Image (tube, rainbow, N blue to C red; front, side, top):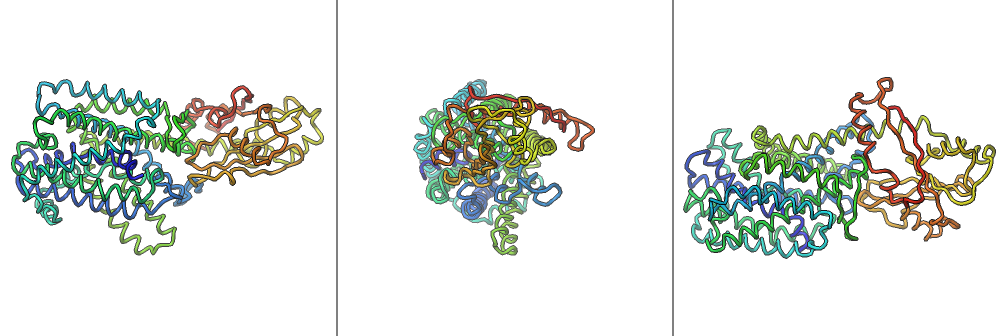
Length: 616
């Protein structure tokens, strides 16, 4: 598990040495000559950012805030029960903050592959400056191949991620030691005083620029928390403290030592650390490592999308399971939208230096939101509010400082991930509000169960042979599809199942707790299937399990007709709700969402759809 964590969790932060110290050193030089004190200040700043933000905050504290083993911002929202918050309450405002945090990961997901692969391929310019025009085309080709590979699943290469990244961290450490030996004086930067004194003696805007650039060294740290459910708390901590942290510190100090001996190497200190004969192999190896780092963030975006759909924050989309392993999924629409954003970033910005301005602002805001939500979870779990405010408050101040420093880069490219995140957050909030309006409209049309009983006993002209399953969005009342069916046909099947899928705020629901069976009257049964937000909710699979448990005797799954309601949303100015143009956006999303039958795994040949118009 520790080896797996090396490959998936630490790919992003593990490739930060390609560009982080270079950008921080350029910010410290601010167009002039890089001084000895500036190099030590930058190295010290990066070291203590890794220790405070990644080691202390994430590895030791944030990883404690788990939802039955799962981590990530969606898991925090589930722990805080923000999904069912009443409008206007503090939990409802918290939900908005949390969804903005989740949306920021999409902005991060577009920038990470771009800057990582681009910075690796730029190593070609060290020995062959004439190859500079080929950097962007080669990067684009690699990224297109990466996104095309997604539909095949990552299981076939996932097994080698860990060993490759272990070798990468060994190379990082070796290069760092090689540099430190040439200038051991760099070890003085172990003292935090160098970082503090260097920052306070700079102009305000220079200090902020240095902080924003140094923050690049900790981007990717949020993956420790997001991927906790896949590997567990202990393997993630072990991989960090035993392998990643020592290798990263050695490499950053090695690059700093190189700049002490030769400040002219500032254009690419990472590749200049390497002996000349090994430059091209190191470029190739860096490209492989950055592809792995990119794969990790893409898989994380897929996982976040699945969780958001299950919890009702995004419309249903096609989700393909590429293997039986947890988290091995492919979301075609998200994949190609992410590809367009990533390739757009490469073509628009052109260099890793330019992209560095766009990187960091989304991640720093996401880290601040995670700190805030984790503090509320700790208080909810009974920890002393004073202790939580003191500890998390200190980290929140650090997060805000880094976010403020990155905000300086807003017009240098920082707007790009924020624009993407803002768009995703808008769609999430619009979808969630629209779903509530639709459910309210359904509630006005939905018959009570007593009417169904009366209809079944006294008003049906006949009972048809066989079993009918009516999909119900709510665990009470009569599904609109059933109301329509009885209204037009005046008949009912001998056996009627009203099936509702409920997504719980726990990541996984065991099979023995899957189904809740409620007998309404003989022949009419309500079946409520409970799934966790990390699970694949299939109605056929749920009913198959129920039949295997002998809770629905006499039901033949091969001889069932599934009746599904399909609603057409009509925005209306006369009904209180969202602005009409937002209702129009929601109607577009709803019209293009994955159909209920396909999303919930209902056998295609056994489905009948009933259309209904709903005004919101």
